[in-house]
Length: 259
Image 1 (cartoon, rainbow, N blue to C red):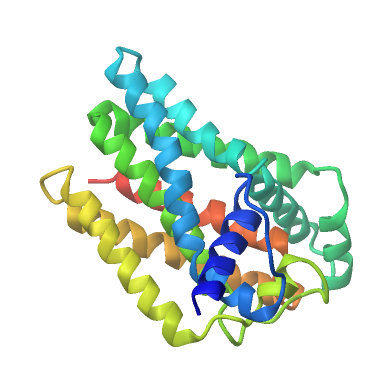
Image 2 (image 1 turned 180 degrees about the vertical axis):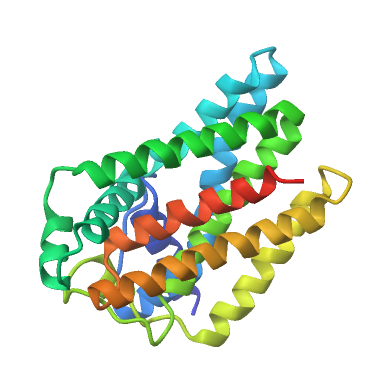
């Protein structure tokens, strides 16, 4: 069990980040453990994104620079794979073509107009919200960056639960699709939402409630996109996972900007 947990952590960090972690196993048990460890990888990414933003703000920089850095770090730590998946999924959905043709469009190396527009507005939205959060103080901005990253990876855990098929017989989607037991996914979701509420409590006021609602909103947004992708493509792919991650993160940040 200890060995499998270690393999799961390696799988999560090796597939969901660009950190120098070697994936030691690529089988279904390791994939299940890895996707259950996905929020842990999100926590690492979130902390690494929040730290420079908070330090810049404390050093006297403006909230816009802090926001831009906190939005850029996750892209660097994933080599832009999740953003690329978001763009490819947008092109596939926007094409309006049958599943086979849409999946072929998603595998192409170029990015079409739907992908470019989606990337532009998602990144603009993330920076705009982080700018507002950092404008309230470094703790607000840093907490928002951490919560968004953790919930975004939790969305991938929930997308890997049993009953969600893979759209292709190969790739990350096929490796992890249907590996996570629904009960384990539900328990992990409850733990993450509670953790987000605890992080929000640091910001004072109704922070705990706001962060919990933001986490639930992020998961709901990812769930709606997941359902649409399964209907359109017949299942999940690595690109769909990237789109789910960015969608959940953006939804969390947007809700945190409200109220």
